[in-house]
Length: 163
Image 1 (tube, rainbow, N blue to C red):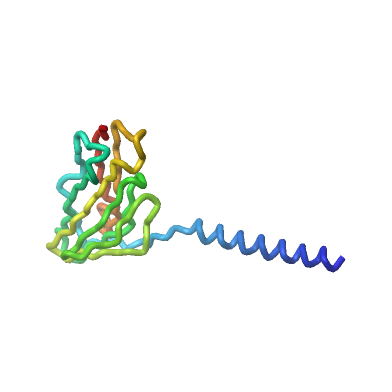
Image 2 (image 1 turned 90 degrees about the vertical axis):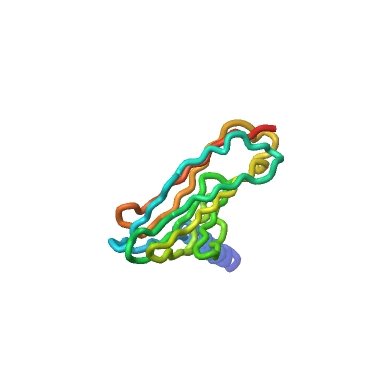
């Protein structure tokens, strides 16, 4: 009888630990930034076509400019990509953020001063999916902002991976 009670207690503790872990992992990691009338984002291009990308030719890169044409700081956060083969980094005043990928939103927030711009550097690894990863591809990158009129920026890159 004593052993049965011990097993029940161990089972309850195990269930509680696993349940708490699952609950913590289900929480979003990113942070929400307060929207502002003072920041105003301007992006020239949001689409890029690499054309043909050789599977063993090294990474393909593209840089998009994100301008702050407002009078207050523009906050950038919640950077994510649509595939693990693609990473994105925000560069402000020569300082780079961590590289972000698919499902990797973090608590990082970058601030672009009024009248300045940031670079959004996208890196695509054509060899990531192996030899079967040839053909047409399209990837999306999202960046959240504190511009209340433009809370989310979306960038699209496409190309064709060839042998």
